[in-house]
Amino acid sequence: MKRFIRKKVKIMEQKQTLFEQALKSYNLPKKQEAVLLASLHLFAEQGYEATSSSQIAARAQVAEGSVYRHFKTKRGILEVILSSITDELLPRMSEEFITELKGQTGLDFQDFLTYLVHNRLEFLVENQLQIKILLQETGSNPQYLKVLVDKFHDVIDTSIWHIFDHYKKQGRLVDWDVMRIFTYVAWAILSAALPYIYLPAQPFDIDQKTKEISEFLVKGLTPGKL
Image (cartoon, rainbow, N blue to C red):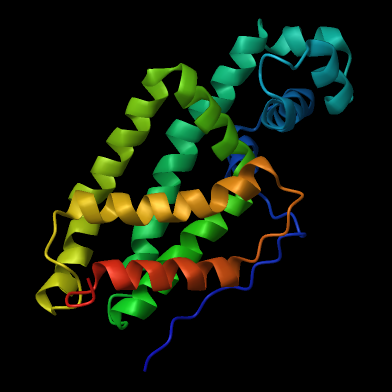
């Protein structure tokens, strides 16, 4: 049986996140970049409301006046972070994800699901700070929830539909609405990652979680296994 090839994830080694890559592409002044990175960590760790400008300045190692010299308000900082997620992180996530998935459709359905689950768990772990802030904001600002839903619909309509249809035609995937299938898969992955996103000090074994989620999804999505 053909097996998928995946990268070994080391949770303790901090990789450069998509947010950090986006900042580099903006060619911002060093102090402005430092303020944004400090804010990202503080907003994720203790919440937007509980974070003060003095804490941001201390974390960024700049004078407090520098915070508001580059950003008029604390909300302005949050808006930059959120826009980087919706305008940079999500589109890039979708593009890379679909490209990788298209190269895996020759796999057995169970191996395909295993690849998909591991890939997305890895992404959520590597970008946990941005994901946490976005989840916090969707709870209080429906605008961001709509952005997320629209992005998911775009991915499904342009690519996921064709991939799932491929497995349906082979009789390996239940003949359900694609959005229904995608929702089940997405929630299974997100629910497994949430404890680590909110409690990053807890151990998180991506390989074990991948195995558990994949087994669960295969039983629910394979015809004749219901």
